[in-house]
Length: 149
Image (cartoon, rainbow, N blue to C red):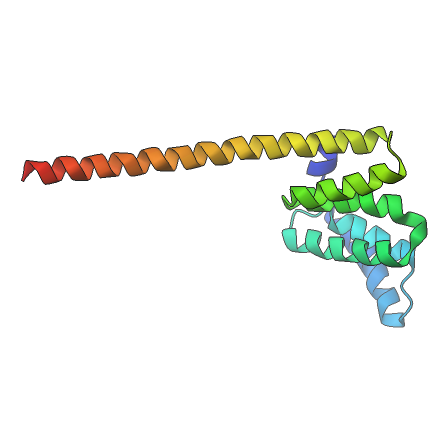
C-alpha cells in the first residue's frame, strides 16, 4: 500500500486527462468519467496544489454522482493523506468501510496512514526535543558568559 501514497502520476497522463477535462469543460458538458480521471491524476501529483484541486473535484463528484461513491472515498482518503491531512483521510476511510467493511485495500490504507501519523508524530517530537536541547544549551552558554564578567 506504500506505493499508493507515494505513487506520482506521469506528466504525460496528467496532461492527457487534463486536456480531456478542459475540452469538456469548455463545451459545458463534463462527464463523470472525465472528471474522475482528471481528479485521480491530480491526487497522485507531486504538487500539493494539484492534490487539493483533485480533492475538490472528487468531493464534487461524491456529492453529485452516487454510482462512484466508493472510488471517490478511496481517492479522497489518498489525496488527504498525501497532503498530511490524516484525520480527514481517516474520515473518508471510515465512510468507505461503512459501505464495504472488509475491503482489504482500504484496511491496508488505514494501517499505512496510522503508521505515517505515528512516524511523523515521533519525528515531530524529536525535532521539538532537539529545539529544547538547543535552547537549553544557549541559555547555559549565556549564564556561563554572564558569570565570567
